[in-house]
Amino acid sequence: MVRALFPGTFDPIHYGHMDIAERASRLFDEVVMAVYDKPLKTLMFSPEERMALVAEAFKDNPKIKVTGYSGLTVEYARKIGAQVIVRGLRVFSDFEFEFRMALANHRLAPDIEIVALITAEEHTFLSSTTVREIAMLKGDVSSMVPPFVQEAFRKKIMEQGDQHSFPNSLRD
Image 1 (cartoon, helix red, strand yellow):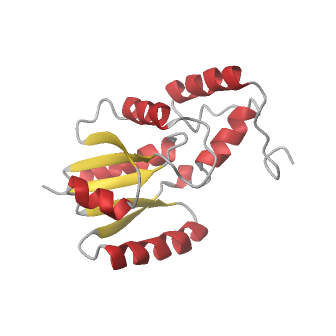
Image 2 (image 1 turned 180 degrees about the vertical axis):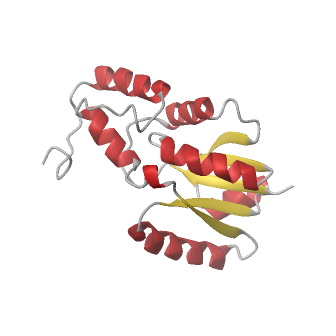
């Protein structure tokens, strides 16, 4: 059995992530969507909320599992017996970042392969940051995220009020 790890913050999960995960599930026996708990960036949703959204996204695909993790991704991959780490590539700038990360991970764990899948053309503009900004500005994200994520945004925005600001963002 080949187990693949698809790590990320998924804050929130969007159609680009879902596309990569579904395609990976056709290539590998199992895909573990690993929600990173403490990235070095500001998040909108808690680890538990993000895991619940990811789980909802794949509830009908028995080959995709959801878990949370912290620490080094390659160490978590070893812990769960993953032979592959899956990453998605949208644009050229992603390639440079992912290439450097893949080289570092290979140095730390030469036994774990890194597989990069190119996102579907209609998702190349998507990033969680973009989706969050549009949602916080009360824009329409229905073409970017499933309805249950839209509802999570609605609840979170009502709960937090207008506390978020996005300098140099889509408002500029």
